[in-house]
Image (cartoon, rainbow, N blue to C red; front, side, top):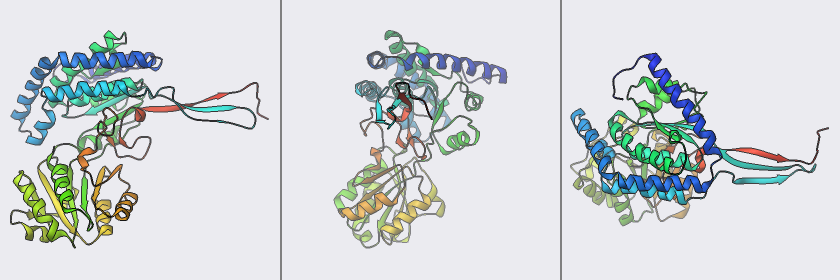
Length: 426
Protein backbone atom coordinates (compact mmCIF):
# COMPACT_ATOMS: atom_id res chain seq x y z
CA UNK A 1 0.00 0.00 0.00
CA UNK A 2 1.37 3.45 -0.84
CA UNK A 3 0.79 6.88 0.63
CA UNK A 4 -2.55 7.44 -1.15
CA UNK A 5 -5.09 8.93 1.24
CA UNK A 6 -7.69 6.42 2.36
CA UNK A 7 -11.28 7.01 3.40
CA UNK A 8 -12.07 7.29 7.09
CA UNK A 9 -13.94 3.98 7.00
CA UNK A 10 -11.11 2.23 5.17
CA UNK A 11 -8.60 3.41 7.80
CA UNK A 12 -10.87 2.29 10.64
CA UNK A 13 -11.43 -1.14 9.08
CA UNK A 14 -7.72 -1.63 8.38
CA UNK A 15 -6.69 -0.69 11.91
CA UNK A 16 -9.42 -2.84 13.51
CA UNK A 17 -8.20 -5.81 11.47
CA UNK A 18 -4.61 -5.21 12.61
CA UNK A 19 -5.78 -4.85 16.20
CA UNK A 20 -7.78 -8.08 16.21
CA UNK A 21 -4.89 -10.05 14.73
CA UNK A 22 -2.46 -8.53 17.23
CA UNK A 23 -4.74 -9.32 20.18
CA UNK A 24 -5.14 -12.93 19.02
CA UNK A 25 -1.36 -13.26 18.57
CA UNK A 26 -0.70 -11.75 22.01
CA UNK A 27 -2.73 -14.51 23.66
CA UNK A 28 -0.58 -17.11 21.93
CA UNK A 29 2.67 -15.33 22.85
CA UNK A 30 1.64 -15.06 26.51
CA UNK A 31 1.85 -18.84 26.78
CA UNK A 32 4.85 -19.34 24.48
CA UNK A 33 8.00 -20.86 25.94
CA UNK A 34 11.25 -18.95 26.14
CA UNK A 35 12.86 -21.52 23.82
CA UNK A 36 10.30 -20.89 21.08
CA UNK A 37 10.55 -17.10 21.36
CA UNK A 38 14.35 -17.34 21.24
CA UNK A 39 14.16 -19.62 18.19
CA UNK A 40 12.04 -17.00 16.41
CA UNK A 41 14.52 -14.24 17.29
CA UNK A 42 17.52 -16.24 16.08
CA UNK A 43 15.71 -17.20 12.87
CA UNK A 44 14.78 -13.54 12.32
CA UNK A 45 18.42 -12.51 12.83
CA UNK A 46 19.48 -15.05 10.21
CA UNK A 47 16.78 -13.81 7.83
CA UNK A 48 17.98 -10.23 8.29
CA UNK A 49 21.50 -11.20 7.28
CA UNK A 50 20.24 -13.18 4.30
CA UNK A 51 18.08 -10.21 3.25
CA UNK A 52 20.89 -7.64 3.41
CA UNK A 53 20.82 -6.81 -0.31
CA UNK A 54 17.02 -6.60 -0.40
CA UNK A 55 17.02 -4.32 2.65
CA UNK A 56 19.69 -2.07 1.11
CA UNK A 57 17.70 -1.87 -2.13
CA UNK A 58 14.59 -0.83 -0.21
CA UNK A 59 16.64 1.64 1.82
CA UNK A 60 18.06 3.18 -1.37
CA UNK A 61 14.49 4.10 -2.39
CA UNK A 62 13.91 5.78 0.96
CA UNK A 63 17.27 7.59 0.84
CA UNK A 64 16.60 8.96 -2.65
CA UNK A 65 13.16 10.21 -1.66
CA UNK A 66 14.63 11.76 1.50
CA UNK A 67 17.30 13.60 -0.49
CA UNK A 68 14.65 14.97 -2.83
CA UNK A 69 12.70 16.20 0.19
CA UNK A 70 15.82 18.00 1.43
CA UNK A 71 16.34 16.14 4.70
CA UNK A 72 19.40 17.22 6.67
CA UNK A 73 22.62 15.23 6.70
CA UNK A 74 21.86 14.13 10.28
CA UNK A 75 18.41 12.86 9.30
CA UNK A 76 19.85 11.05 6.29
CA UNK A 77 22.34 9.38 8.63
CA UNK A 78 19.48 8.20 10.85
CA UNK A 79 17.78 6.71 7.81
CA UNK A 80 20.76 5.11 6.11
CA UNK A 81 21.30 1.34 6.32
CA UNK A 82 24.57 -0.28 5.28
CA UNK A 83 26.03 -3.75 5.82
CA UNK A 84 27.31 -2.85 9.29
CA UNK A 85 23.99 -1.45 10.49
CA UNK A 86 22.01 -4.40 9.16
CA UNK A 87 24.49 -6.75 10.85
CA UNK A 88 24.06 -4.73 14.05
CA UNK A 89 20.28 -5.22 13.89
CA UNK A 90 20.76 -8.96 13.51
CA UNK A 91 23.25 -9.00 16.37
CA UNK A 92 20.76 -7.07 18.50
CA UNK A 93 18.13 -9.77 17.95
CA UNK A 94 20.64 -12.43 18.97
CA UNK A 95 21.47 -10.46 22.11
CA UNK A 96 17.78 -10.17 22.95
CA UNK A 97 17.46 -13.94 22.53
CA UNK A 98 20.32 -14.42 25.01
CA UNK A 99 18.59 -12.35 27.70
CA UNK A 100 16.74 -14.04 30.54
CA UNK A 101 13.07 -14.46 29.79
CA UNK A 102 11.20 -12.06 32.10
CA UNK A 103 7.80 -13.74 31.80
CA UNK A 104 6.89 -15.75 34.88
CA UNK A 105 9.72 -14.23 36.94
CA UNK A 106 8.78 -13.95 40.61
CA UNK A 107 9.61 -10.36 41.47
CA UNK A 108 8.85 -10.83 45.15
CA UNK A 109 7.10 -13.32 47.41
CA UNK A 110 5.82 -13.33 50.98
CA UNK A 111 3.45 -15.09 53.34
CA UNK A 112 0.70 -13.62 55.50
CA UNK A 113 -0.07 -14.62 59.11
CA UNK A 114 -3.25 -16.34 57.89
CA UNK A 115 -1.19 -18.67 55.68
CA UNK A 116 -1.83 -17.01 52.33
CA UNK A 117 1.23 -17.13 50.05
CA UNK A 118 1.53 -14.15 47.70
CA UNK A 119 3.80 -13.72 44.66
CA UNK A 120 4.26 -10.74 42.35
CA UNK A 121 4.96 -12.25 38.91
CA UNK A 122 5.94 -10.67 35.60
CA UNK A 123 3.53 -10.95 32.67
CA UNK A 124 3.33 -9.38 29.18
CA UNK A 125 1.64 -6.05 28.59
CA UNK A 126 -0.33 -7.57 25.69
CA UNK A 127 -0.24 -5.46 22.51
CA UNK A 128 2.26 -2.62 22.15
CA UNK A 129 1.84 0.11 19.54
CA UNK A 130 5.12 1.74 18.49
CA UNK A 131 5.14 4.97 16.49
CA UNK A 132 8.53 6.08 15.20
CA UNK A 133 10.02 8.25 12.51
CA UNK A 134 13.09 7.98 10.31
CA UNK A 135 15.20 5.25 11.98
CA UNK A 136 14.26 1.93 10.33
CA UNK A 137 16.33 -0.11 12.80
CA UNK A 138 13.58 0.55 15.34
CA UNK A 139 11.52 -1.98 13.39
CA UNK A 140 13.88 -4.78 14.40
CA UNK A 141 14.51 -3.48 17.92
CA UNK A 142 10.82 -3.01 18.73
CA UNK A 143 9.71 -6.26 17.14
CA UNK A 144 12.43 -8.26 18.88
CA UNK A 145 11.94 -6.73 22.33
CA UNK A 146 8.15 -7.06 22.21
CA UNK A 147 8.43 -10.70 21.16
CA UNK A 148 10.90 -11.53 23.96
CA UNK A 149 8.54 -9.95 26.50
CA UNK A 150 5.60 -11.97 25.14
CA UNK A 151 3.86 -9.01 23.50
CA UNK A 152 2.42 -8.60 20.03
CA UNK A 153 3.18 -5.26 18.43
CA UNK A 154 1.78 -2.93 15.80
CA UNK A 155 4.48 -0.75 14.26
CA UNK A 156 3.98 2.59 12.55
CA UNK A 157 7.25 3.71 11.01
CA UNK A 158 7.78 7.08 9.42
CA UNK A 159 7.05 7.74 5.77
CA UNK A 160 10.77 8.37 5.18
CA UNK A 161 11.63 4.78 6.16
CA UNK A 162 8.55 3.03 4.75
CA UNK A 163 10.30 0.72 2.28
CA UNK A 164 13.21 -0.04 4.62
CA UNK A 165 10.94 -0.92 7.51
CA UNK A 166 8.80 -3.19 5.33
CA UNK A 167 11.89 -5.11 4.23
CA UNK A 168 13.01 -5.54 7.85
CA UNK A 169 9.49 -6.61 8.86
CA UNK A 170 9.59 -9.37 6.25
CA UNK A 171 12.68 -10.85 7.93
CA UNK A 172 11.05 -10.67 11.38
CA UNK A 173 7.92 -12.41 10.14
CA UNK A 174 10.04 -15.07 8.44
CA UNK A 175 11.60 -15.84 11.82
CA UNK A 176 8.18 -16.06 13.47
CA UNK A 177 6.91 -18.49 10.85
CA UNK A 178 10.00 -20.67 11.14
CA UNK A 179 9.45 -20.95 14.90
CA UNK A 180 5.77 -21.83 14.45
CA UNK A 181 4.48 -18.51 15.79
CA UNK A 182 1.89 -16.27 14.09
CA UNK A 183 3.51 -13.65 11.88
CA UNK A 184 0.78 -11.29 13.08
CA UNK A 185 2.74 -11.07 16.34
CA UNK A 186 4.69 -8.28 14.60
CA UNK A 187 2.67 -6.14 12.18
CA UNK A 188 3.25 -2.82 10.48
CA UNK A 189 0.60 -0.34 9.39
CA UNK A 190 0.69 -0.66 5.58
CA UNK A 191 0.09 2.99 4.76
CA UNK A 192 1.81 6.31 5.37
CA UNK A 193 -1.55 8.06 5.74
CA UNK A 194 -1.31 10.07 8.96
CA UNK A 195 -4.96 9.34 9.73
CA UNK A 196 -3.87 5.81 10.66
CA UNK A 197 -1.93 7.24 13.61
CA UNK A 198 -5.02 9.05 14.84
CA UNK A 199 -7.01 5.81 14.67
CA UNK A 200 -4.23 3.89 16.42
CA UNK A 201 -4.31 6.30 19.36
CA UNK A 202 -7.98 5.45 20.06
CA UNK A 203 -7.69 1.64 19.94
CA UNK A 204 -8.12 0.94 23.64
CA UNK A 205 -9.85 -2.36 22.85
CA UNK A 206 -6.79 -3.76 21.10
CA UNK A 207 -3.66 -1.82 22.18
CA UNK A 208 -2.42 -1.78 25.79
CA UNK A 209 0.32 0.83 25.53
CA UNK A 210 1.70 3.28 22.94
CA UNK A 211 5.41 4.05 22.64
CA UNK A 212 6.11 7.16 20.55
CA UNK A 213 9.69 7.53 19.34
CA UNK A 214 10.25 10.64 17.31
CA UNK A 215 10.37 14.41 17.26
CA UNK A 216 8.58 16.86 19.50
CA UNK A 217 5.60 17.28 17.16
CA UNK A 218 4.93 13.53 17.14
CA UNK A 219 5.21 13.20 20.90
CA UNK A 220 2.99 16.23 21.48
CA UNK A 221 0.35 14.78 19.16
CA UNK A 222 0.42 11.45 21.01
CA UNK A 223 0.14 13.20 24.37
CA UNK A 224 -2.77 15.29 23.10
CA UNK A 225 -4.77 12.62 21.28
CA UNK A 226 -3.97 9.22 22.77
CA UNK A 227 -6.60 7.40 24.78
CA UNK A 228 -4.16 4.52 25.19
CA UNK A 229 -1.60 4.65 28.05
CA UNK A 230 1.71 6.02 26.76
CA UNK A 231 5.41 5.64 27.55
CA UNK A 232 6.54 9.22 27.06
CA UNK A 233 9.68 9.75 25.00
CA UNK A 234 10.21 13.50 24.97
CA UNK A 235 12.98 15.39 23.24
CA UNK A 236 16.59 14.45 23.91
CA UNK A 237 17.82 17.83 25.07
CA UNK A 238 20.96 16.41 26.68
CA UNK A 239 23.65 18.33 28.57
CA UNK A 240 27.30 17.72 29.35
CA UNK A 241 28.56 19.74 32.31
CA UNK A 242 32.29 20.28 32.80
CA UNK A 243 32.87 20.76 36.52
CA UNK A 244 35.82 22.67 37.99
CA UNK A 245 37.27 19.31 39.03
CA UNK A 246 37.24 17.88 35.49
CA UNK A 247 40.22 16.22 33.85
CA UNK A 248 40.89 18.35 30.76
CA UNK A 249 41.74 15.44 28.47
CA UNK A 250 38.64 13.49 29.49
CA UNK A 251 36.48 16.56 28.97
CA UNK A 252 37.94 17.10 25.51
CA UNK A 253 37.36 13.55 24.25
CA UNK A 254 33.97 13.10 25.92
CA UNK A 255 32.46 16.34 24.58
CA UNK A 256 33.59 15.66 21.01
CA UNK A 257 32.10 12.18 21.13
CA UNK A 258 28.93 13.25 22.93
CA UNK A 259 28.16 15.79 20.21
CA UNK A 260 29.70 14.51 16.99
CA UNK A 261 29.69 10.68 17.04
CA UNK A 262 26.13 10.72 15.68
CA UNK A 263 24.45 14.11 15.84
CA UNK A 264 20.96 12.89 14.94
CA UNK A 265 20.30 10.54 17.86
CA UNK A 266 18.40 11.46 21.00
CA UNK A 267 21.45 10.88 23.22
CA UNK A 268 23.58 13.49 21.44
CA UNK A 269 24.65 16.38 23.68
CA UNK A 270 23.00 19.63 22.64
CA UNK A 271 24.38 21.98 25.33
CA UNK A 272 27.75 22.08 27.07
CA UNK A 273 28.03 23.86 30.41
CA UNK A 274 31.42 24.64 31.96
CA UNK A 275 32.47 26.17 35.28
CA UNK A 276 33.83 29.70 34.95
CA UNK A 277 36.90 28.89 37.05
CA UNK A 278 38.21 26.47 34.38
CA UNK A 279 36.48 27.70 31.22
CA UNK A 280 39.41 29.66 29.78
CA UNK A 281 41.73 26.69 30.30
CA UNK A 282 39.47 23.79 29.27
CA UNK A 283 37.22 25.27 26.58
CA UNK A 284 39.66 26.42 23.82
CA UNK A 285 40.81 22.95 22.68
CA UNK A 286 37.25 21.62 22.97
CA UNK A 287 35.92 24.41 20.78
CA UNK A 288 38.74 23.87 18.29
CA UNK A 289 37.97 20.13 18.07
CA UNK A 290 34.27 20.71 17.54
CA UNK A 291 34.70 23.36 14.86
CA UNK A 292 37.34 21.30 13.06
CA UNK A 293 34.86 18.38 13.05
CA UNK A 294 32.26 20.57 11.32
CA UNK A 295 30.18 21.59 14.31
CA UNK A 296 28.55 25.01 14.47
CA UNK A 297 29.13 26.32 17.97
CA UNK A 298 26.88 28.95 19.53
CA UNK A 299 28.10 30.36 22.79
CA UNK A 300 27.78 33.05 25.41
CA UNK A 301 30.15 36.03 25.62
CA UNK A 302 32.97 34.08 27.30
CA UNK A 303 32.78 31.21 24.81
CA UNK A 304 32.81 33.68 21.93
CA UNK A 305 35.90 35.37 23.34
CA UNK A 306 37.78 32.06 23.30
CA UNK A 307 37.29 31.31 19.59
CA UNK A 308 36.36 33.74 16.79
CA UNK A 309 34.30 31.06 15.05
CA UNK A 310 31.82 30.78 17.92
CA UNK A 311 28.61 32.64 17.08
CA UNK A 312 26.26 34.27 19.56
CA UNK A 313 23.80 32.00 21.32
CA UNK A 314 20.13 32.97 21.68
CA UNK A 315 17.66 32.22 24.46
CA UNK A 316 15.87 29.86 22.06
CA UNK A 317 19.02 27.76 21.66
CA UNK A 318 18.92 26.58 25.27
CA UNK A 319 15.56 24.90 24.55
CA UNK A 320 16.46 23.42 21.15
CA UNK A 321 17.15 19.78 20.35
CA UNK A 322 19.25 20.32 17.23
CA UNK A 323 19.71 16.71 16.07
CA UNK A 324 22.42 18.22 13.91
CA UNK A 325 26.04 19.40 14.08
CA UNK A 326 25.13 22.42 16.23
CA UNK A 327 26.03 22.93 19.88
CA UNK A 328 25.27 25.57 22.51
CA UNK A 329 27.92 26.47 25.09
CA UNK A 330 27.40 28.33 28.35
CA UNK A 331 29.79 29.25 31.15
CA UNK A 332 28.17 28.79 34.57
CA UNK A 333 29.15 29.96 38.05
CA UNK A 334 29.23 26.55 39.72
CA UNK A 335 27.57 23.15 39.94
CA UNK A 336 24.31 24.52 41.36
CA UNK A 337 24.11 27.04 38.52
CA UNK A 338 24.58 24.14 36.07
CA UNK A 339 21.87 22.10 37.78
CA UNK A 340 19.50 25.09 37.68
CA UNK A 341 20.11 25.55 33.95
CA UNK A 342 19.49 21.87 33.21
CA UNK A 343 16.36 21.83 35.35
CA UNK A 344 15.01 24.89 33.53
CA UNK A 345 15.87 23.85 29.97
CA UNK A 346 16.45 20.08 29.86
CA UNK A 347 14.01 17.36 28.87
CA UNK A 348 14.92 14.88 31.65
CA UNK A 349 16.49 12.55 29.10
CA UNK A 350 20.26 12.27 29.69
CA UNK A 351 22.67 14.64 31.43
CA UNK A 352 26.34 14.12 32.25
CA UNK A 353 28.96 15.61 34.55
CA UNK A 354 32.70 15.48 33.91
CA UNK A 355 34.70 15.69 37.13
CA UNK A 356 37.24 13.87 39.27
CA UNK A 357 35.42 15.13 42.38
CA UNK A 358 33.24 12.22 43.51
CA UNK A 359 31.16 14.31 45.91
CA UNK A 360 30.36 16.76 43.12
CA UNK A 361 29.41 13.88 40.83
CA UNK A 362 27.13 12.43 43.51
CA UNK A 363 25.49 15.81 44.11
CA UNK A 364 24.84 16.29 40.38
CA UNK A 365 23.44 12.80 39.88
CA UNK A 366 21.22 12.98 42.97
CA UNK A 367 19.90 16.49 42.27
CA UNK A 368 18.68 15.89 38.72
CA UNK A 369 15.53 13.91 37.94
CA UNK A 370 16.67 13.00 34.42
CA UNK A 371 15.96 9.42 33.31
CA UNK A 372 19.72 8.90 32.83
CA UNK A 373 22.52 10.73 34.65
CA UNK A 374 26.16 10.04 33.82
CA UNK A 375 29.58 10.64 35.32
CA UNK A 376 32.67 10.92 33.10
CA UNK A 377 31.00 9.31 30.09
CA UNK A 378 29.56 10.39 26.75
CA UNK A 379 25.81 10.92 26.62
CA UNK A 380 25.86 8.81 23.45
CA UNK A 381 25.85 5.76 25.76
CA UNK A 382 22.14 6.50 26.43
CA UNK A 383 21.10 3.39 24.56
CA UNK A 384 19.52 0.10 25.57
CA UNK A 385 22.11 -1.91 23.69
CA UNK A 386 24.90 -0.14 25.57
CA UNK A 387 23.06 -0.87 28.83
CA UNK A 388 23.17 -4.59 28.07
CA UNK A 389 19.48 -4.76 27.14
CA UNK A 390 20.16 -6.03 23.62
CA UNK A 391 18.20 -3.11 22.16
CA UNK A 392 15.58 -0.56 23.11
CA UNK A 393 12.34 0.85 21.80
CA UNK A 394 13.24 4.29 23.09
CA UNK A 395 14.27 6.32 26.11
CA UNK A 396 11.24 6.95 28.32
CA UNK A 397 11.34 10.30 30.08
CA UNK A 398 8.02 9.99 31.91
CA UNK A 399 7.89 8.93 35.55
CA UNK A 400 5.30 6.14 35.39
CA UNK A 401 6.12 2.46 34.76
CA UNK A 402 9.18 2.78 32.49
CA UNK A 403 12.09 5.25 32.63
CA UNK A 404 15.26 5.38 30.59
CA UNK A 405 15.88 2.71 27.95
CA UNK A 406 12.70 0.72 27.30
CA UNK A 407 13.92 -2.86 27.09
CA UNK A 408 12.45 -6.28 27.77
CA UNK A 409 11.62 -5.79 31.46
CA UNK A 410 10.03 -2.40 30.81
CA UNK A 411 7.67 -4.11 28.32
CA UNK A 412 6.14 -6.23 31.06
CA UNK A 413 3.69 -5.63 33.85
CA UNK A 414 2.89 -7.94 36.77
CA UNK A 415 0.09 -9.78 38.48
CA UNK A 416 -0.32 -11.23 41.97
CA UNK A 417 -0.64 -14.96 42.47
CA UNK A 418 -2.26 -15.74 45.81
CA UNK A 419 -2.31 -19.34 47.09
CA UNK A 420 -4.37 -20.48 50.05
CA UNK A 421 -5.68 -23.59 51.74
CA UNK A 422 -9.33 -22.80 52.43
CA UNK A 423 -8.89 -19.38 54.06
CA UNK A 424 -11.95 -17.15 54.32
CA UNK A 425 -11.95 -13.51 55.37
CA UNK A 426 -13.63 -12.73 58.67
